[in-house]
Length: 177
Image (cartoon, rainbow, N blue to C red; front, top):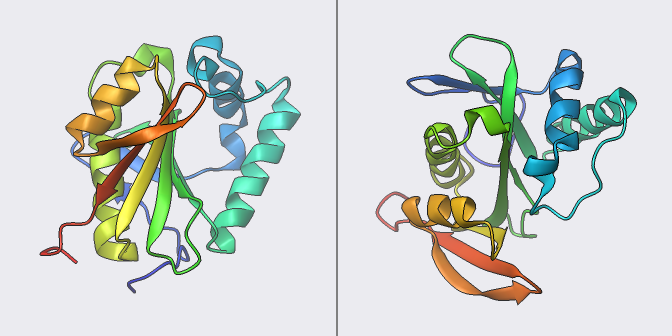
């Protein structure tokens, strides 16, 4: 089924990754990710303070997916069930033609092409399954790794979106829509 329906949850496989739904058993990994100072450095969010924070977060994320408000994948290596990062599409426009992409990866797995592999598939999903016309991403001006990733994915720098934030945008190729 094409369009913005996340039931059943769309599992995405790549050559070396599985993108799957968050599970309650991911609570420790989500806590590690969301409480990590390096991961949070450019995100401007309050770090998780407890496993309960992580459990509440997982519950909220899965409720959002059930309502088709957002889709949030756990990134795992191959068939290994351990979460090493996340990637999501959220903030859908009212007409469901645009959304924002967000992602995070544990430091031990950064710089290895993992997020590029995951994001390439999520962008493909966004344009060819959900049929979005555009995807936006916001990154901190000092976050050079994220800036390089977005540029490698074909996003173009649109504007300064606020204090230290840069807006990037990717538009669907009309031939693929």
